[in-house]
Length: 259
Image (cartoon, helix red, strand yellow):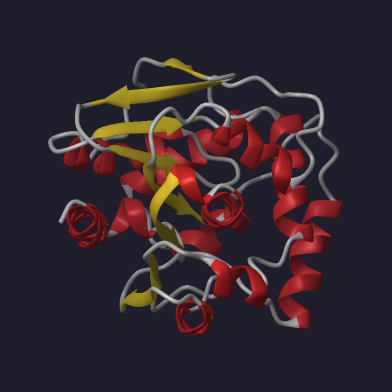
C-alpha cells in the first residue's frame, strides 16, 4: 500500500481526512505522524461508516494551538469537534487521548479501540522516553532512525519509508509538544480504567517493546468492558503493517455497537 496525501476538511479547529457515511469512527494518530497513517483503516471503514481522521495539533495540516502541552488540551480540541457519538480509535499517543476522552466525555464515545497503548511504564522505560523528550528543542528534528528501529525493527518497507517522511517533515514545535505530553503521561490510571462505561478493545503487537502485551492485558482486566487482542508478529506500527488484522477487529467493534 502507498500512503498518499489526501484532501483535508475542517474538524473543529483541526484539519482532518473525512470519508464515508454512517456511524462515526474517529481515528487519532500518534506522535510525529499524520492522518495518512490511517490510510488502510480509512479505505476499509469508510465503506460502512463516516470516518474522521484528524491531524493532531502541529502535525499534518493542523496548526499548533496555545496550551498544546497537556493531555487535556489535546482531548478538549478533539471533543469540541465531535458532533455525534463516535467509536474512537487511537494509536500510541492517540490511544492515550482516546481513553481520556472516553473517561471525561462518555456521552461522546460509544466504544474505544486503544492500539499500542502504554500503561504504567517500567522505571527504565519511563526514564528513556523522558530523556528523548528532553533532547527535543522544538526548532529542528533529530535523525528518526532510532525511532523507526523501535517501531519497525530494521526491516525496510513502504510503511517505514512513509513514517520516515512524516517524521522528517513534521513541525518541530508540534512534535516536541506532543512528545513531551506522551513522555510525562503514563497512560490511564487504574481508577480511570475502572470507570470506563464503554466497550474497550486493547490491541497491540507481540513484538511491541514499549506498548507491551502485558500493558494491554492489565488495562483490559481493569476496564469493566475491556478485552485484549495481541497480533503476535506485529510491532508498534501495527495499523500500517498489519492492517488486515486491525481492520477486522475494528469492523467487529463497530458492528457490536450497532446491535
